[in-house]
Image (cartoon, rainbow, N blue to C red):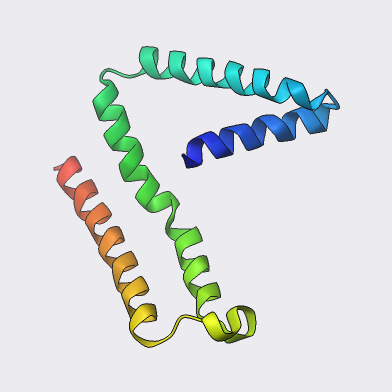
Length: 112
């Protein structure tokens, strides 16, 4: 779902930057989606391998936002009463370490 939101957001931003009517954003989104499908079908040997590689890449791409979110969630100045503390804070960071560790293990086994 995030890919759809990001693609629609980039199409909207392009239309706004160019000065076109907002109704053209969906046509830009459609055009970039068709180009992505064509590139995926013709530039990859196996669609399943491409999907698995992307899922693995997402683990490492999302490290920065996950760390930022964890830091923001634990700040009382920002979150107030809802700031992450104790068990929930430890659970968040341990789950992040677990996911990144599994990503590293996957890369190592993929290379070997």
